[in-house]
Image 1 (cartoon, rainbow, N blue to C red):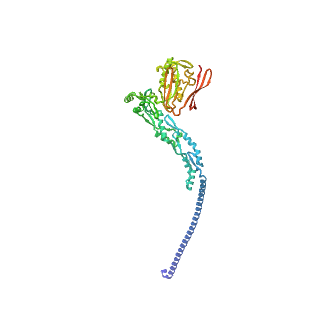
Image 2: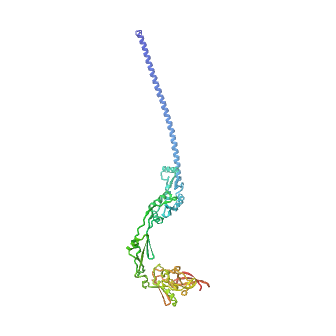
Amino acid sequence: MKNIINYKGEIQKNTIFLIGVKNMIIQEDNIEVVEEEEKKEEEKQNSEKGKTGTKHIMVILGIFIGIVFLVLLIIFGIFTIYNIKHNNVIAKGVYIYGIDVSYLSPNEAKEKISPKFQEMVDTNITLKYEDYETQLSASEVDLQFDIDAAINYAYKIGKNGNIFSDNYEVFDTMLKKVNIVPTYSINKEELIKYLDNLSKDLPNAVVESSYYVEDSELIITKGKDGFVVNAEQTANNIKDKIKDFSYLNDAVQLSLTPAKPKDVDLDEIYKKIYKEPTDASYTTNPYNVIPSSNGVDFSMSLDEAKELLKKSENECKIKLKTLYPSVTTNMIGTEAFPDLLATFSTRYNTANKNRTTNLRLAANKINGTVLMPGETFSYNKVVGERTIAAGYKEASIYIDGTETDGLGGGICQISTTLFNAALYANMEMIEVNNHQFVPPYSTTGRDATVVYGTKDFQFKNSRNFAVKIECSVSKGVAKFNIYGLKEENEYDIDISTDITSKTSSYTKSTTYRILKQKGKVVDKQKIYSCTYKAH
């Protein structure tokens, strides 16, 4: 109650208390304000410090970037100068089929790599199937490598015109290196043809049917099953091996296909075998002689031949017959051969009957023979083998330097007489052989001996038109006339024989044909050289 009564005092006391409290509150507020201001100041200082640090970092970063840029610029400049300096050569790090062509001009690069690719072209391609092996020449199928294109591609690296991309390309090539493989070309048509032809060489190749004519018989051989080269597939195998150059060390496997031979086409064979005979004829304006020719036919009907072929297992033989013309070349009259080109005769002893018979047999075989321009006359072929069956008799001949009787003796007089006639007709001599001794019907260097199967007398009709040979053996004279058509440029002909050497045991001579026009010598032709034993 005392506190309440003392009201004034309490009020003062409370009031003072209250005032104290208020002052304390104010003081606390001031502390908070001060703290906040200090905080702001600190933050401000920190912010300023942060800004200063950031600026410092940015400056450093800017300096670093500038240095890097400057370095890159220097490198770029160096590369630019480098590229300009090496603009006329191939960049470093460039290879063509593993061959370094860095810093080489295109010509130098070609000179360096050409031998290698020439070696590749010269290398054979080995083709193989099981135990069978063969070689294909790369040049045979025109294998070529385009080294010019490869060099051109290599040279253009780093030379495209854009300085930035060029520098990058050169730099990248230096680091990674570039290997260029040239493209190639090959003649596929020739390759396929080669492979097709290769089929027949295979050990297990298909055997096609075939036929041939022998001794008036058509002989047909039937084919056998086998294999053929698959040309397309093998060609692709070869191209693959060339593409990666593995053909240099590895064989190319042949691709084969089973095959059967083609059926025998007898109708087609008959068309090729059958031939109509041709009659001889001639024309005068222009002058031309068309010789006769024999024809050929089956000796049986075509249907009979087909039946015979069916019954045959591996081989079939069909007889042939000769079809003769109505008018042979020998039948053409002298009107087709209007001019006498040459004549020559020799004498014989009519008392020797066997020898005379032989002369006539040989002469009759030759009489009427027509030679077309460029055709060669063979005495042995026209006269044939001298046999008893042909009617030849025993008469004197020379064997190993000794005179003895032999079958067909005397026919050398016919060959000698014809030889001289052919010389004067300006025929080209192909084969002439002289006797061991100078025969009585001739002179040195003017004879022509013949022995069936070993020695022949041959000459060629080297004139522009056909000629006809006529001969006779009568009343001790063997005579040959050669008819034809005189040419605009005819020659007067002399035959001369020079004795080049003569001893007690032999005589050597050389025979010449001398061509003249208007009395002047135009040409002197050596015919043959002879060596005769002395009698």
